[in-house]
Picture 1 (tube, rainbow, N blue to C red):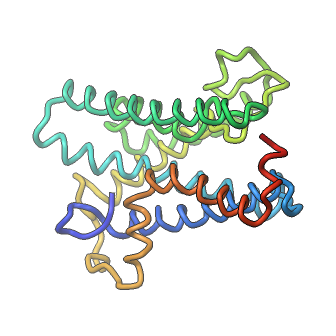
Picture 2 (spheres, rainbow, N blue to C red; picture 1 turned 180 degrees about the vertical axis):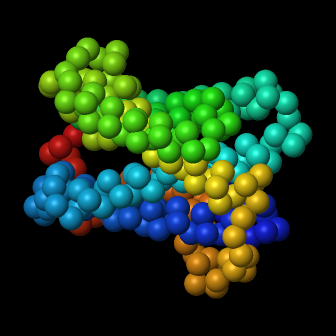
Length: 252
């Protein structure tokens, strides 16, 4: 949620998501340049790995914040069963987008195709959120517990059916992997933050009601983050193809 008061969105949330969008594009551009052998860049550790983690963390945290706001507003006109169905449908739709990414990467990048990436994760998180939206401080405690549990599960090898949880075969590789543990902990932190600072779906602090002119481009990007997510990689790949035509063909 974000933007202007008239649209029912909060600009500061959209602007924060917009910053994450820019970071995502930059990281994926650098990742692709390295992956296709155009230029050697270390993306598995150091600065760029930190950018990747911070970007994913921002998106996921804001999922929790946005859910508290939309849920509070929707609860004024829908009963609890209808609210649960609403988020089950929304989560299933986002998960479906994730399956589209799975199919595309399986066809074109089979060596590291995405089985459970960020869209798969967000879809499941949206479906689970209604069971946690009633809590406030408890979500902080559960969030910490989830993060700690993730450090344990991610060190355990196991069968493919547990991939969503953070347990995977030793040979598993993927271009994007966002398991429920530990990442759902950040959603829970977002739920707490949303309840605390946007009670009832209303901004609970003063001084930020007017959208700064300079924040408008960021807020615009944040409002269209899903569309940008789908479009930015083909554009990056096209740019790489124009710069180094043979690079992509060697990898596919």
